[in-house]
Image (tube, rainbow over all chains, first blue to last red; front, side):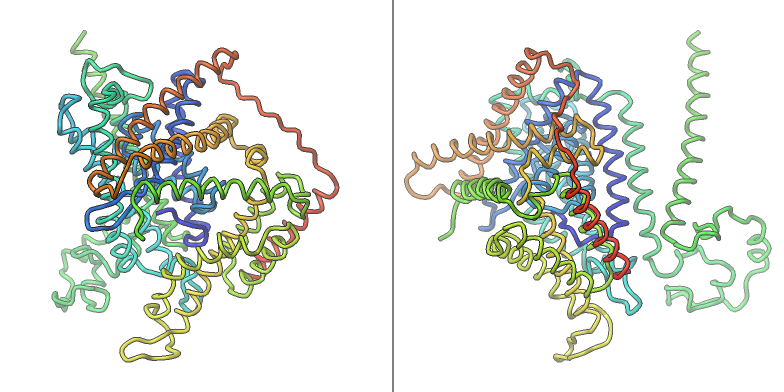
Length: 354
Length: 269
């Protein structure tokens, strides 16, 4: 899953470096709330541990072998922030000193395998193991499922990154300049291997490690256990995480907005009056075009002109960039509304408690 | 013969150590790259890597590959090692990925085999991907092979990377070898007590147990390092010794790298 140099365009790499930088900054800030002198050896040693675990050649059912990422164990023991930094450092060491994975694609690899995988593993584990005792069998199952989800979420993201390359980056003759396969080929090709072997390897090592720790060192499972009397370490989740998680999800969706331009035609039922009468502009051949635009639709269609028609302002030629800008505008608007509502609610709560 | 968990993982460990040893040995040679300031090597090779990524023409990427080979020869990097450790591995991995593109990329057919046809666009995209990856990985490998890791870390300061990050990278690199050695010893001790073949389910248990013990040892090590840092008065401020000095030769090298990269970007646009 380590994407080498040359598979992704420089602009894709740039966007993913920016996305990864946001994750690194947030993770480092959260960890810096404790002593920095404690964080440096903890992240360093755990990164080295992840590096070594990635080299374990696990025998899998069916006679094959696979390598785990170790991201789920990191997320369970250190929490998401520690896991993001430890995995990112392990991936950087692989790229910088062992030539495994690219340097231009380091941001993409960290975004996929350190940030998205850590958050997926952590959220899945917390959700499935919620309320379970430290020694519960449910924690072992939760770790296995979390590992499986984390690796597949990461692989899906890499497949999407590959799949948008030929659509966005090709020369005049239609020759793809980077990864050559579209989403329809890239996603199944990538996911078959990960839904079977790679996901299974991560599930096996995560479940095995949690089962081992339950017996040998249960204290290490306390940090992310969600049990009220558990010792809360530096890396444990804080109350504000739900809002931050929402921000992260929004950021990921914002980055994926250019995917919308890959879909042919218009969404069903979202036709303009002109598209309603034209069969060529509608992909659903089953629905025959109407001969005349209803008068009410014609009248109402001119009632409101959107500030960013078709999700792209007129002055922006690149559709992908227009989509991103529109997404940022929309998200900004939603956040302002939600912050205003939160403030009103907080004021009301304050008044009622007084 | 099929290898089990213990044998194949130990083989991976020894390969990683051999790779690092090769880098240390090549970095001691007195070649072209070795004579330049590490910051110039880092920035220059990154600039050429960026040029490889930005170039849209096969001929320009091929020219950059030739430049990489010339730099390798002038830096006493063994072509045999490059063929074995870089080019053949990339050819195997990317070649398999690029091959179907020859058939499935839509475009002008140049040859047909029943329902399948090779397209001009398919041939071009497969060749471009393969050559681009080979060239990019060669430039990265040249940096790794010709620069001791401690110099790479110091040179990364030139890219304005935070000192804390460089400090973590330096510590991780050191502990990778310590933990590889520890895990290797654990596997070796198990191997020395094993007669016959360990069944796959027991191998999976062995992997989980080894990883678990390694995790406990890692966290104990992290605590020891933390206490050692505290005892030496560490308060979170990272100090790095940066004694690099740019000479006229280094400036010439940097200008040459940048001119080559800009020319490649311009020609390959």
